[in-house]
Image 1 (cartoon, rainbow, N blue to C red):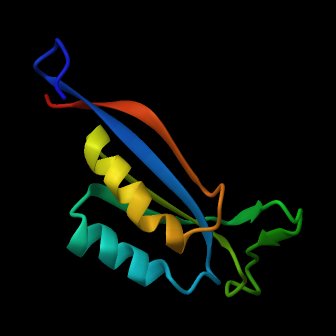
Image 2 (image 1 turned 180 degrees about the vertical axis):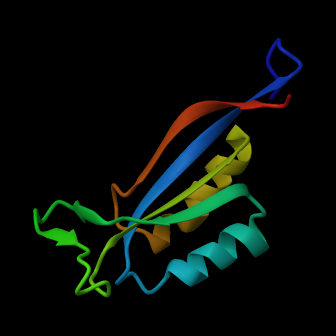
Length: 107
């Protein structure tokens, strides 16, 4: 859906909260890339974080192989995002997918 400015497109950004121990990350990426063809996928490894358990997971110089937070983000047009979120919901714990409207600047 294009808004009144021809250099902008309305879209939706999705952030998925995971952890390194989630073994389905590669499968999730494969679905997003190969099957759903969403655009703008990025995976970021956090240096510290905690979830609903309250247990803090952090990286130190001595131990970089902990169960650190991982954020997967992607964006696309509203219809594509709705389809993608419905498809990936089984890969992710309830409440770990958030989204918000964004504008894609074209120039």
